[in-house]
Length: 308
Image 1 (cartoon, helix red, strand yellow):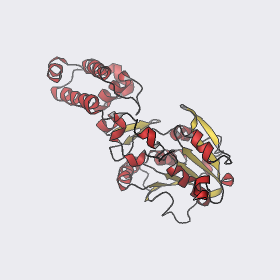
Image 2: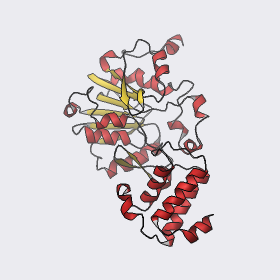
Image 3: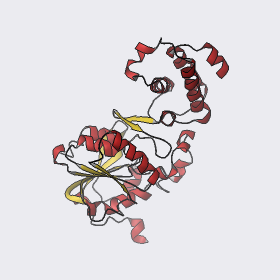
Image 4: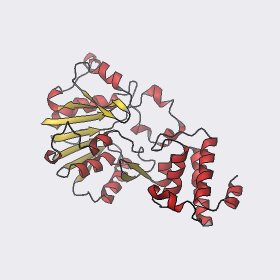
């Protein structure tokens, strides 16, 4: 099939059609940025050619070189046969209009917190200019740290991750956005190496996939680091640590923002007395919760940890 394709494909339109057909022939999963086979094919083909996706119509009938056709076929076949996500094939992912370099050392950015940041976390943050310090826990590729630094122009941002590999990717993205003087990368298991530092805002998109769900994920997720996905039996292993230390690292009027995927029920079972607010995102109102510093216990404790 590849030999036939090389012999017959000529234009960008030809390759785009070929990609859509190949993607529809296999049960690949679209959950890392694109919604269907056409969007996936368009993103792969246009970005691999370093062309603007929003102006695709201008280039559809452009002839490709043999080298370009071979490259695109190779990428398409890796997507189909190896189920490698497009972001890893291209080395880039987009989130709320921001471009980030990514590879298999980090999960592909897809946090719904980014949607809230684009709106300056209104109405929970009444004055974006008054935010002077932000902590991004489990920063991964640094996407939320970069967006937060852009949105809150007066803020210094600490971007924390336990993975040295992830921090290396984050460092590249911080440099790409020229934020080295405002975003500090910290290797730490949550708050462990932060000392007594306090922040106006703590963000966290932690690993939250339950053990049971982890085994059912599509093959595409097997290319991502398990450390960044696995949240334990109920998905809250890391979330518990985040909540436990948040009060002592937030300023008096600070705000904690945590993403938990489909874990709302688990959070409400574990913390029935905690007054959280569930933010509305494009995925609904059960993905991200917010808690004021004043509403957090001095040391959050769960029924499970208390019993222990």
